[in-house]
Length: 351
Image 1: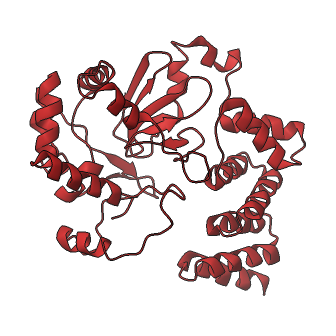
Image 2: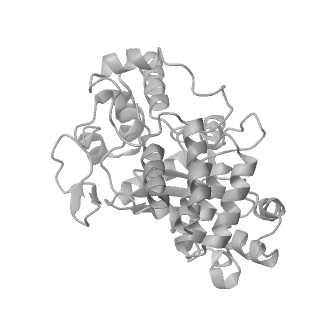
């Protein structure tokens, strides 16, 4: 099962897909790294089915939605991709040509634990309040729900510098100030709770890629003035760039260690890569190149790091160096078709 979409690995046959998943090897040693994948949610659903002795969907509706008074959400259920729900805002996305397109097709029931439900902000506010009050889970269970997993190397990991930890289906903003936990989905919605500030914020959109998680801190600053930029609050990218400029983009390892110590986040290979692309977006290719070079030095077995370095060399028209890095991508990932195509194009340009 893919973590990026709802396709099954066996021609949309859930039972065959489940059988195939169980025969595949582990991608890495347990607790060695973070890798979001829907299969974990499928396994979680099967555990709930067995322990509750009823389907996951029925368990949630009976023991959570009905318990705290969410009748419309309960009625809409989990089949929100297949059925017409009155007043529902369906997901959409932008195509490469700028046209609007619907986002999802039919969703297999086996994937329901990885999906969501049809509801509204008011009902979600009721839900997060019930969680905080212990009406749905006891204190120890809630802690387990929101405590990020610490990997073997002693750090947490997640989707980004902001969501830098992952618990049981909840993303964790594991930082020194205004730590938070969020339940974000489809890159379109977020429900975030700042436990030290007793503040919850809910942002719902129907645009895939809207990514409200990226601007929710700005909303929080309305209620928490010290989170305003004019009062000194900075995103991890902003602080990294500031310290890096102070060091003239030398000693990048020291820059990262300093910022990690200050704000309490951890920067893994993907976070550092994202920092590099943040600089690319500012048309700062030379400093981005420095970041990407550091990343491949620190993570010599990461194909994506070499891909980013190769792409930047290509943008700078340093084609020989771009070729070397894409060849390294192919060495690490022999089946990488994108790298093969880029190598072919680079060789044509160099002729």
